[in-house]
Image (tube, rainbow, N blue to C red; front, side, top):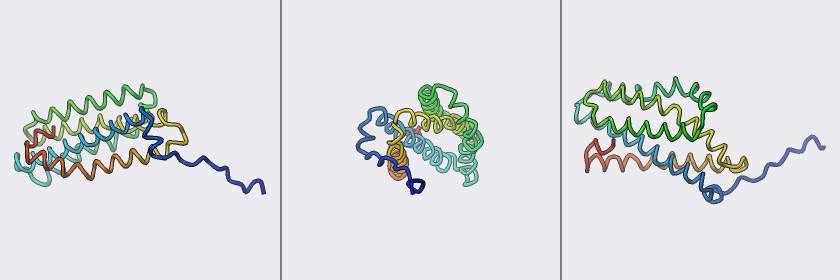
Length: 180
């Protein structure tokens, strides 16, 4: 009978408990801003290629593939490297480099330039995700990880839902360059 007992784990922490932790709140807010910034840049790029450069659907797809391909190839290796590097520095450097790359899109005036910039952006982004996962495990107690991961996922998807409307309004009001 003793062997049939399953070890009971403590109940997961409430969202409020996890969100009350300043370090987690900072990470959550950083993810919110970072994902929103990424989405704005992509929306601005699609708008510029389509309306300013009069690009084709193939060119838009090429640029999106240029952005996603480095993440697909590099992310598995990046996770191994990030485990050996100072996580906080990797996250800060990654976000700062991504911000500079996104801002440099203002200077890109052709589809190949945009594709190269987004490929570099995707390469740098490959290091942010694994670093964030490691940071979460070090910032939050083991029993709070379930709630913390759920809150980060909610932030990610909330931004994905809100961003199109905000980015569309921003492009209509200020132009595509405002997204960069």
